[in-house]
Length: 170
Image 1 (cartoon, one colour):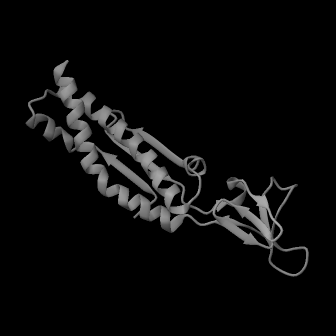
Image 2 (cartoon, rainbow, N blue to C red; image 1 turned 30 degrees about the vertical axis):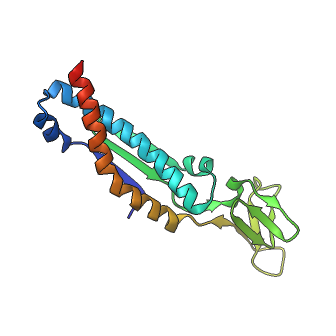
């Protein structure tokens, strides 16, 4: 499992020839299928990671990159930033006992007004040292990305066949 998913349509060329399509029809169908599946995979990954971590989709999508690569457009890539999320990105609220931000509750923490509203917690009994507070998303994020990888091949083939039929009907 990884924080990156690759979408490769090079093997779809054979399926297009089996259906009786020309190379001129296969290439735009592959580009379109990769583009559509890559966008779908990015949205679906964000949705699944958000559901698994209970962090809002806006925060998760801001940490993702979705792109179609290559000159011929037959490669796609979805990358999800699965490092710990600073609590400041999740609209923290100061409470009597500490800080609440999304699903995270940190007793004894405080929101710094001078340091870009970051959330800190004292690690000792004195004023300093303090430690920046984050929310872990790695394990649920990897599980979500792994389950999505299994569905991409089938989805890509179905989308390619649909796009190829449309190209052949033109």
